[in-house]
Amino acid sequence: MVFACSAESKNPKEDNSSAKNESQKMEVPDSPCEIVSSEDIRAIIGVESSFEIAMKDKDYTYPTCTFEWEDKKVTKSMEIGGKPMEIEMPSEVMIVLVKDANEEKFNRSTQVYKDGVEVNGVGEIAMWGNGMAQLTFLKGSVMIHVHVKVDNDDAINKEKAIDIAKLILEKI
Image 1 (cartoon, rainbow, N blue to C red):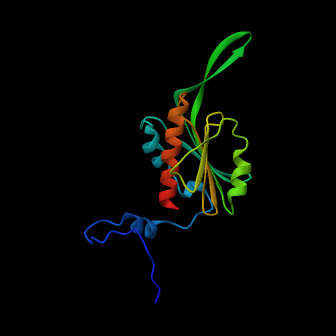
Image 2: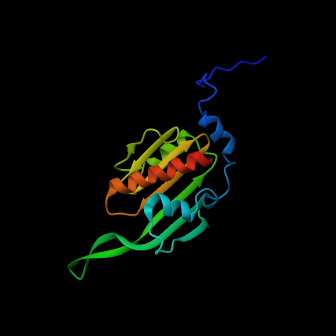
């Protein structure tokens, strides 16, 4: 006989959602576009239905899923001809999936975050960088980068990246 200790409730009427979630999780797919849909992005970010979200599934160094839409919430300051200008940029979410990852690979990937801060409660280890507008997290042997540039406010981008990461963690 095998016995295991757990933090399960002794009350059979209480919901054990972690056990439910485990049975509903999928095997990690080959593309992040198979994990997160345009409708997931629309719901999490709050993209109005009048904006079309373009989804691109590419395999660069690693499988990458990009979502873009033109809602004029993101601007970039530039100087053109000696004059300061605000250029409208598309709002963007990019998810990169890295299989066969470990803490060493995570550390190498996040060393480029000049302003990186640890994020608790997302995977086994996670880091956010304002400069890159990106959250990187590790769960088991899967590392995921979630780049979110949907607002000029870094705090909003970070909050939305964490929400997307939590959705991914629910699914994988």
